[in-house]
Amino acid sequence: MNPASSGKRRRHAWLATIVVLIIALAAWYAWSRSANRQPAFATATVERGDVEDSITALGTLEPLNYVDVGTQVSGQLSALHVQLGDEVEEGQLLAEIDPTIYLARVEATRAQLANLRAQLADREAQQTLARLQAERQQNLIKLDATSQEQVESADATLRSATAQIQAIKAQIRQTESALKGEEADLNYTRVYAPMGGTVVQQLANQGQTLNANQTAPIIVQIADLSTMTVRTQVSEADIAQLEVGMPAYFSTLGQPRRRWEGTLRQILPTPEVLNNVVLFNALFDVPNPDGDLLPQMSAQVFFVRAAAQDVLTIPVTALQPSTAGRAPGEAVKRQPSGDGRQAQVQVLGADGEPGPRDIRVGTRNRVSVEVIEGLEEGDQVVTGRISASAADTRSGPPRRFM
Image (cartoon, rainbow, N blue to C red; front, side, top):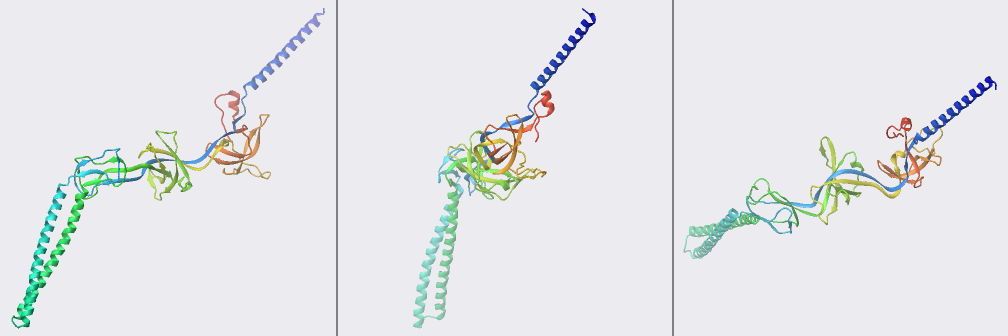
C-alpha cells in the first residue's frame, strides 16, 4: 500500500470528523437557543367578568335623625334615668334637676297672686261704696240738700276706686304671666325624650351642676339608628363626576366583605379644607335594620358611574389606538374609552404572531375594560413586549411597553 495514499485518506477522515462535529455543535447550539428563548410578547386571555367604573372616597357614618337633649334651667342633676346604649321612647323621663329653687319661686308667686286678688276684692268693695255715695250726692243736689263740692268729691272718689281696680288687675295679669314662666321652669327640671331612639352619647353625670345661663347644657344625645347617613368627603377633582341619584355602596373596616347600598341624596355646596385639600361632603342614606352600623364608623365608599356584569374583559394595557378608517400615512390617535368607542388590540394568531384587530369597548376602569365586539372568549391579546435582554438571559420578569 502506498504510504502517501494512506496518509491522504487519514487526513480526509479527520476532516470529515471535524465537519461532523462542527455541524453537531451548530445544531446543538441552535436547539439550545430555541429551547431557552422565551415568548417575545406578554399576553392576556379574553375572559368573562365584571367591570365597574367608580369613584372612591372615605366616609363616616352618622344617624339620619338625632337630637341633643339638653336642659333649659340650671341646677344639680339629681337623677339620670338612662345610660349609654339604652333604647328610649318618645316622652320617656330621662333626667331630673333639683327643683327646690324653682318650686320655691312658684310658691312665692302664687302667694303674691293670691294677695293681689285679695286687694282686688277690697278695691271692688270700695268702688261699690264710692258709687253709692256718688249716687246719693246726685240725688241730694237735686233737692238742694248738699253742696256741689260734695258731689264732685264723691265722683272723684268713685273714679279713683275704678282706677285702683284696673291697676290691681294689671298686676294680677303680670303676676300670672310670671307664674306661667316659673311653672315652666319647674317643669323643665324634668327632662323628657323628644323622640324615640338609642342613647348614643352621655355628656353629663348624676350629681353634676349644670349652668344654663349662657348655653343649654347637653345631657344625652338620642339617635334613631334604623337609618344611617354616610357623610363622604370627595375631592374637588372628582366632585364634578357625581350626580344626585347615582348608586353608591360602601364597606366598613369590621365587615370588609359586606356591601351596604344606597343612592346619592345630596352634595353640600360648602367645602371643607383640610391640609390645603378641598373636600366636598356627599350624603346618602342606608337602612340599618340589624343595627350593625354605628355612629362614627369609617366607610370605604364607591360611587358607581357605570357597571357591566358578566361581559368579555381584557386588561387596559392591551388597548392600542384604532386605525379603522385611517388614511394611509395619517397619524394614529388614541380615542377615549367609553360605550361603543373603537380601539385596537394585537391578537395572537395560530402561528404565534400578533396581528391588529379593531374592537369596540364599553365600561372601563384603571385595570380592565369591557369588550362589546371584536373578540371571543379565550382569545390571546398582547399586553406588552418582553425586552430582548430578558428573552436571552431570563434575568428577571419581562418589561412591558406599549
